[in-house]
Length: 160
Image (cartoon, rainbow, N blue to C red; front, side):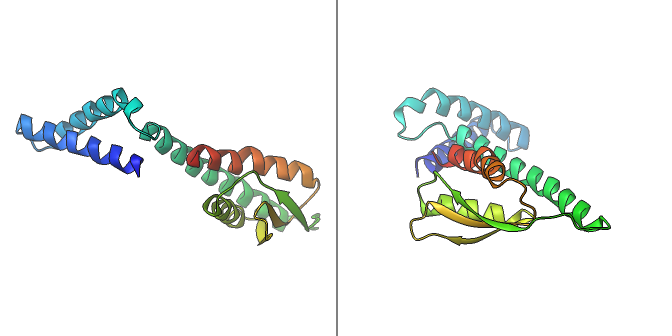
């Protein structure tokens, strides 16, 4: 809610800048947006929430991380499929998460499912355990640590 207020305040400052300069082009809007960004940053201690660009940067990093993992796992799955002999060990493992809210857990489950080679099968009644099927499990602990270090960490940066 506060993040939306900061964004709207920044946009209002940009439009007021354009109005005061009587120039309605993108460069003037961008200059007003940068001026509003500096203004909102200077007043960040008066808002309940953190500066909104920090959260937008965290969202951008999560998106880039997902795209990177998507490409890497696609390459891994294609490499496994094109081998003459399948050398995989599919399996299911329990993943303990530190995420709290339903939204965070749902996002994690969706990111895992959208990444080729893994699939979230179920979330336990206490939403701290996800059961994940992986196409190739050589070490379940290593796979769990990779998920914690990538998706879970990035989701925590976005939501907290």
